[in-house]
Length: 198
Image 1 (tube, helix red, strand yellow):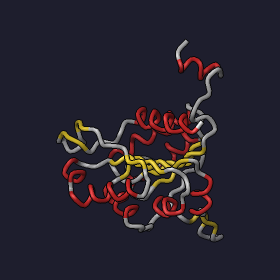
Image 2: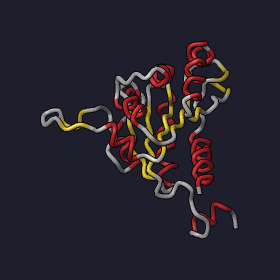
Image 3: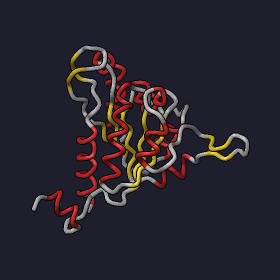
Image 4: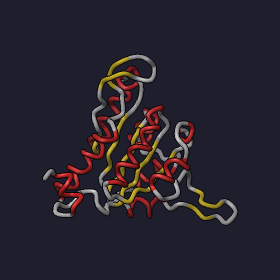
């Protein structure tokens, strides 16, 4: 019997079962990969709350991610402008057992590395007490830029888990590093992380 079959029949614990995960999606062409990532996390038994930046919403819709996560997608601080209800970034940061930001654009990496929080995604990052996993995604020249590499190193020095960006074909037509780690690999990394906690 394989490990996957053992997880399915309940004889082996699933590392993501009932885990509370935040998924932050920032503005990158790789934002379309958030849909299969959410689907895989939910299939693994995780409870997934998606936070979508305004820029990310140009690439993938809240409706898609909300349908897959079975939760309303959070796109900003305000829940209801008329009543003043808002999404509490502190509560979200305390709720999560892990915060995954995938894709993490160059802009988002810069905000996080420098403590800036112009949106809900970055405000939750500053409030989160849980482990943070970042999956950079951008073109190879952006990824190789010293400012971006410095931000990645700084984020690692803060204790964040920053996935290496694999080489391959990019949306620009160029080839090299800068791709977002594939959803299956992100799920595998998270599964390994939570397995080691048990």
